[in-house]
Image (cartoon, rainbow, N blue to C red):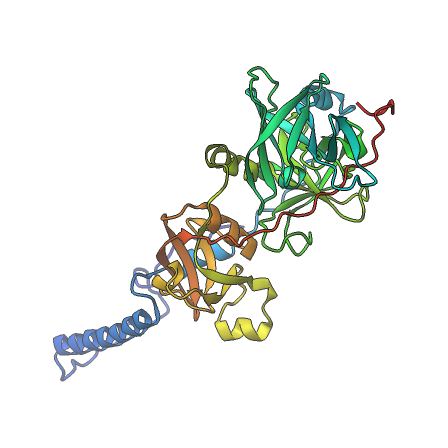
Length: 428
């Protein structure tokens, strides 16, 4: 498109127009007119500022509308033709590199009545469960699911070279179903590299290794079917923190705690749950970035202490159109405050029911489960900035996080091990 030459009509008036006649001077001095105009605008502006200030908490910092739009509705990425990625001719290199780091975990206990699926380990001990884990440190640190070791009286870890070594629970977090098992007295176990689960894309190839039905070191492959599956998608413990990777790689009972790998042989998830009875093409894995965030604390303290805002929330997408209009939310996404704990961190910061949280500590919040995770892992006593929309106004407010009071939990009943005959040639 051809650009028109720049022209300013005041600098270059049309030759066809008549020159304007000079205006008669006003009876009012020009200075008085300017003074009255400025005074009028100043009074109007002060009135708006005071009204807006009265609507916000004392420590609130108003956010310009442009910043609010950036935080809640990022501009769409420019359209580009899809990049076609070719799959591998074989998954053997991935399986071969990861297999030495994958272990079988047996949980043992006294015979409570010798269930149908129990099998003897020797010395009167009965195997009560079997699962999978993977070595993350050469000194014997193994990651698995909490439900694999929960309630176990004794743990045996079988390495890829068939050695069975005693182990103990070094730390666990029931709300994320993550546990850390420690094998003492070892220094040279093959640790598996951990990848970046945030870099995964739907459609990427992934490989699962585990012990389904006691068949140790079984390899299956598939793709990432979806990301961000939460409690509504996977009906597990309602108090849990879930952000599952969904995959169609075959996962069955016994795969729990095993690694989900990318094509570089890096762990990007920990296989945890199945839907539809197993091998239905719908399996769920905990993102490895979630595991990496909790691992140092679990090793140090044996548990994870969560921080809290002191609010109950719901996803803005669940609101009715009438509620969105009443709260003046527009099309913004985030977490809506349903209630505020009296005397809690949010109450002290003057947050209110109906406020929409769209960012937390500099991270955009597009769903309530993300806020729940960010707030719980930020740290007790940390002061964070929360971005809120209230009655159409967007502002930032500092909040000092408190400690989340964990409810008392009753250990879940152990699932029996799958049928395993010591003489079966398929049993290692």
